[in-house]
Image 1 (tube, rainbow, N blue to C red):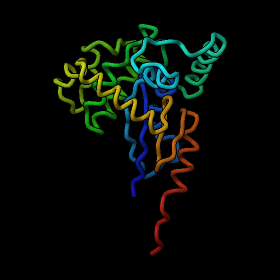
Image 2 (cartoon, rainbow, N blue to C red; image 1 turned 180 degrees about the vertical axis):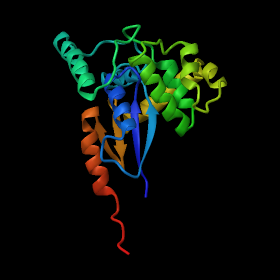
Image 3 (tube, rainbow, N blue to C red; image 1 turned 90 degrees about the vertical axis):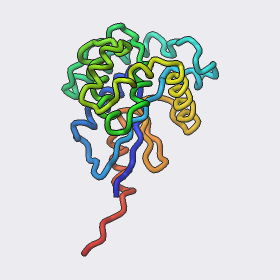
Image 4 (tube, helix red, strand yellow; image 1 turned 30 degrees about the vertical axis):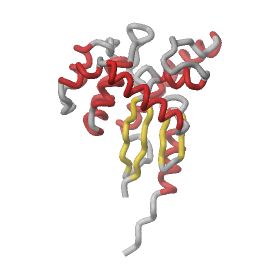
Length: 208
């Protein structure tokens, strides 16, 4: 029996980037798992948490000491995981077009596209709001090139906002967040606990 695990993510999150690679590497004790990548906007989640309009302008929620700690923590984790990592350009990238494009793809192409975009942003310092960059990321993902144009349309943004609001209603408040059999796990550092929980919930095989 395959266990479904939904992964809610935004490309801007370095912790979601770490999660992507840890899952790709298969370094955790997961078996019989279907990873379903669910793009959401971290800005909308933060606005909803603060009681603001979902599309209100971005406000940095972190005080200066916590922001400094986060930057140091991300650098340490990249070294710990042995992952190449470079600061994004621009420093605060616009991930909305890439998220909209991911949402337009079917599950398998979306997973491959998601991996490609994470690497383009965090390893290659590519501008993931650029249509040409997205086209390169889509190569080999069985996605229609027409989807790139649709990802920049207002209807795609509205769809992403709606999906993010629904995720928030179901308890998703940040990224990466994992949902397994109704249980919610927040953060890259909860992958081990998620693996343990998924194993406990998996029906034992009948002896023959």
